[in-house]
Image (cartoon, rainbow, N blue to C red; front, top):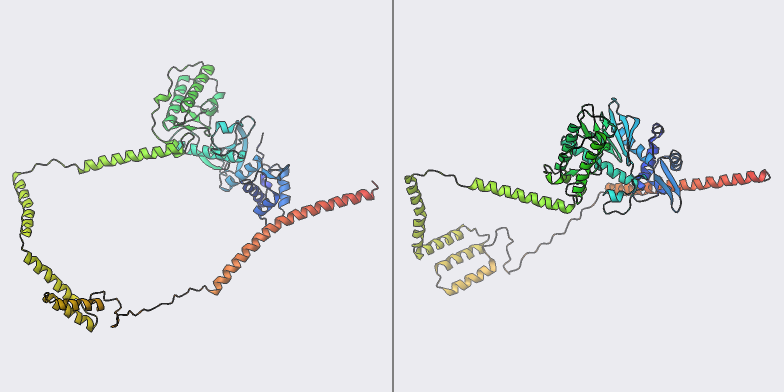
Length: 503
């Protein structure tokens, strides 16, 4: 059993916490972190990483293992110190008090801030001998096969803080969450007693009814507590109930949701019958649940899979589309109005006018159409400005060709001239030479050059980075070499002393 001992916290320096953090970072990819890797990650300015490691092992903040693999690993004590250091830096915790509770997977302590306001600190400690079948009871691992207990405790704390936050925002009677870090959750300190310590109640029926309402209300949010019993319910002086302990909650979409719901109800019924000799005849059933919100979707509760999330989004989108179509249909539906006969006659006249206009257009003679087209052609030719004298000659030839269309020889000359000089192309285009060749101009690309000062800066930066990496690696190697030399020197001294003493 791990106990929180904060007496050493005030004596740890910045370097001690750097080494603890280095061990924590190394445990992401290593079960046992080598000393050289710890020294490389910590990167202490003045060295001394191995000395700090020995001190941390002495105070049981980290553990040293020299079995098949040699290295260090973080203990729950060191993990507690890292969490407390972070919460203290956020001005959440200033002092730590007594332990007020202990469960199969967590410890509860009283803490306070600088103003003296007290909170409850919950430290998750998964991996105890009383609760090791975590893969069967929780879905923290998901598709993973193995993981450290520290990482699982961190996931449990994240889940509990998320549940507390969303339930408190929806006015459900839970402790107000304050903050969390790693495996520690800081929450409001509830003034009351656990239901398991209560021996008498003035009105057991009212309290029983309130608890049944809380179960139904939680199921209406889409969640099931799964551990709704006398150990996780706190009663104050007014017999008001506060619910605690949420990492094991599941969604109402879970395969075993009905079984969990019935078990929570039966736990309260059995306790009231055993302790207060009260048997509630009216109790809720899973089929009576009416979902009011989708909190299990917001926090991705256990049992609500990605496939369900996709189906839920599709159904919501379909419902939203149906509502929009109905609204558009209502907006587009014509309103009933009273129309006079005079208005109807006017509308008929208006409808006849376009038909008369189209009929007039149909009866126009083709000669007039030809006149219109020829007029537009002459206007277009007249507005075109020639670029050179050859263009003027070409334009004049074009006008002559339009006036005398019967002369085939003129048309052939005109087509040849147009093919050679192209008088109607864009004004900005280059004019071809008289021999039919284009003037081709080539441009040489301008190459951008980097300033010599910028080149020096980049080279200097890369060299400094390489030197820094080499310096870090050298620190770890020098520390290991110094330790081996010290051990050899001690062995030589002991041998010389034994030889001189005549042993």
